[in-house]
Image (tube, rainbow, N blue to C red; front, side, top):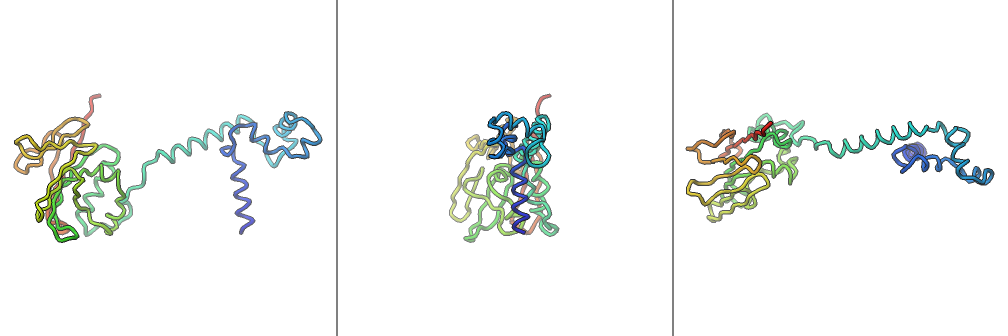
Length: 236
């Protein structure tokens, strides 16, 4: 087993992506014995390229560059590939709130949707708290694996768009990368989308605003949950 692993590691080291240049690739095939008898590094390198020296099949310069480019593109694709959805493969059949999160996860991650979630419930200290949460910001700054695995509850925090502790009467508000909080306007709490500058009105008796849909979720998971789904429209 150890010998096989060592051989595999050796083969990996011989791949084009492990060399900075084609000449480095050829030089790695030149032995001390070759240099001793030929007394010419360039000649030794040319003999390797022609197949007279070296280990196994020697790649031509064009083949080397093609493979190196393919490896580079493969590496870049891995780096740019979006992370897998945290909700993927989870059994959420009896969890309406987590189902609602799952249906929005990919759309919010790829920027097609921005969602503000109002959540009201009791925290770990038994205090009743509520708040407005920027889902996109939470998805970007924390792992949702714990939520979809039911190891953690999705609760509002003082760092969210708006937060209120009904027992201590503590309230906070903070703009996020996606929304600006507008509180001192006489019209109640508003949130302005920073991308298209549309205003979302969370007053249940008013229209939520252009391109925004308000949906209240019936669930026993929390005391009260409301989703404000906002789609942005770009000109041409």
